[in-house]
Amino acid sequence: MKIMVVGGGGREHAIIKKIKQSPLAEIIYALPGNAGMRDDAVCVDIGAKDLDGIVAFAKEKQIDYAIVAPDDPLVLGAVDRLNEIGVPCFGPRANAAIIEGSKIFSKNLMKKYRIPTAQYEVFTELQAALAYLDTVSYPTVVKADGLALGKGVVIAETKDEAVSAVRSMMEDHLFGDSGSRVVIEEFLTGPEVSVLAFTDGKCVIPMISSMDHKRALDGDKGLNTGGMGTIAPNPYYTDAIAKQCMKEIFLPTIQAMNAEGRTFQGCLYFGLMLTPNGPKVIEYNCRFGDPETQVVLPLLKSDLLTIMMACTNGSLAEATVEFSDGAACCVIMASGGYPKSYQSGFEITVESGMAAEVYFAGAKESNGQLVTAGGRVLGVTAVSKTLSGAIANAYENVGKIHFEKAHYRTDIGQRALNALK
Image (tube, rainbow, N blue to C red):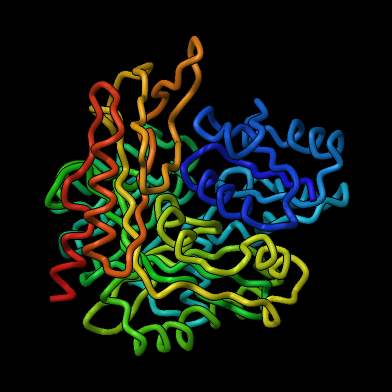
C-alpha cells in the first residue's frame, strides 16, 4: 500500500515509524515531514494546511490510505476532501473534528449529554467577560474558543491575570479569530491524565494512559509549552478509574457525537483531571497528542496500520489491539529560549550506539547537515520493563545527542515515580 501521512512533527514521526513495521506498508510519504524523518519516509514539501496540494498529490501518487495527524487540517476538512476523491483516511471528518476546533462546542456537548467537566460560561462580548471575572474564585481558567497551537489556555492565579488574558484574546486578538469567543471555567485540581483512544464511531478502545509535562522548566515551573516530555502508563490512572471513564466519559462522548450527526472515527484524545469528585474532561483533541504519541505507540504490540484501517471501515471491534506491560519515557529536547524566542540552524549530532527511538520535530537539512528548525527539536523515547528503567534509559540517550543551546527538563517522570512510591 502507498501511505500518506499529513504532518511534520514528532507525533508524525512516531506514527510513521510504527506503520513502517506493517507488512502492508510499501511506501510512506510525509507531507511535509521534516529532514529528521528522511530514513523512514519520503518527505514532500506540501504543507499540512495546503488541502489543494494534499489532494493533488494523493491523486498523482494514487495513494491507498491517508493518515491526517494534526488538528488544523482535520478541522479544515482534509479528510472530507480526500474522501471525495476516494482516498480512505484515518482521522475524523470536519464536522466531528469540531470537538477540538471549538471549545465552546465541546463544553456545550458535555453539558447537554451530562459528561463530567468543569463548570463554565461562554462570552462573545469583552465587557460581559470582564464583569464575570468579578464573580469567580481564583485560580480560574480562560480559554480561546478555537485552535491556538496549544497555547490558547491561561490558568489565571489572580483577577488581574484573568483580565489580562481576556483582553489579550478578545481585544488584542492574540490568537486571531480563535479568541473572538472565550470560555471562562472553574479551575479543577487533581492529577492530569491523557488517554488516547481508537474509535470507529461505535467501538472505543483506549490506549495506554500517559502523563504530559507542559511546563518549560524543572519542578513544573516556567511557561506552558506544547509538552516537554511524557511517560506511560500514568500511575494515577487505575483499572477502577479506567472503567469509570469508559462508562461516564468515553462511550458517552462517542454516543453524543453520533446523536449530533457527527460520527467520530480516528483517534480521540481525552485530557482528564482526576478530581476529588471523580474524573472530569479538561479537553478533547481530535487526533493523537504530541508528545503523548511518542510514548504510547512504542508500547503498542499490534499492527497500527491494521487498527487504523479498522477505525476507518467500522470493524474496530474485531481488531487486535495489544500493548506491552512495560513503560516508556520521552524527553523533549528543545531550542534554548522555547517557548519564547529562540535561535535555529544549529547542527544536530547523534552519537552511535543509541538505545532509544529519536522522533524528530523541528529539524531541516542545511548544506548536507541536519540542523535545528523549531522550538521542540526532537524527542528521545526509551522503553523498559519499569518506569524507572525507561526514565534512566531515556536520559542516558539524551546525553548522546548534541546541538548548541539545547534545553530539556531533567525531571520528566519524577512525579509519576513519586506516585508509585
